[in-house]
Length: 273
Image (cartoon, rainbow, N blue to C red; front, top):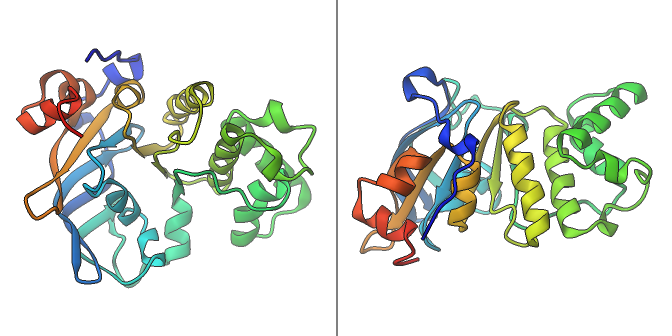
C-alpha cells in the first residue's frame, strides 16, 4: 500500500519545539465496570493535526470523547489517570463542563444540524455563552462560516433550514457551529465517513487550513486520509481481553513508513483491521 503525504503531514515539528494542548497520562476509561481503554499516555500538540487510527472496537472514539468529557452524557463512566488541557486536569471537580466543551469542541461522524435555520445553527453556542448584539452576532456567524469554507455557498440562504443542505455542507455547518464559540481544540470523530469523495476532499482541505488557527484530533478509518491530513498519528489496538490500548504514537511519516511496532506496520499496510 502506497501513501502520499501532503506538506502538512511531512512538516511535523520536533516535539521539543511543540506545546502540548492536551497531555494524557496513564488514562484508563470505564463504561460502568467495563474497561474500554487502558494506560494511554500521549500528547496532542498545539497547532498540529493528530490522527487516531486502529481497527473497530479498539477505543478510538472512546478516547476522543474522553478528551472533553462528552462521554459522560452517554451514561456512568469512570476515569483513572489524567487529561491536562494546557496544564489543567479536565477531570478535576472544579472544571466547568460547559466551558470545557466550548474550548474543546467536537464534530461527530454523522452531521447533526439542528432543525432550524443555517444562521441559528451557527449562532446557537454563541447565544448560550454570551449575549451579543445583532451586529456582533452577524459578524461571528459570517466568520465561522468563512472558516468552515461554507460562506459563499449559503450567504444568500441563511434563513433557510439547515436540513436542506447536502451531507457535506451539513458537516461543514457543524464545524462552523463548533468554530463560532472559538475553541482551542477541535475533536473530529470520523467526520468524512458518511460523505462522498468530493465532500471528503473539502473537509480535508478545511482541516489543513484550520490547523493554523487551532489544534485538531481526528479519528479516521481511512489510512490515506490520516497520511494526508495529520502531522502526528496514534495507533490503537486491542489485547487478548479486547481492551483498547495505545500501541504506538509518533510523527505520521514515521508511523506509516518506519513504525517501530510490528502491529502498527501490519495495520497501516492493510494486513489486518
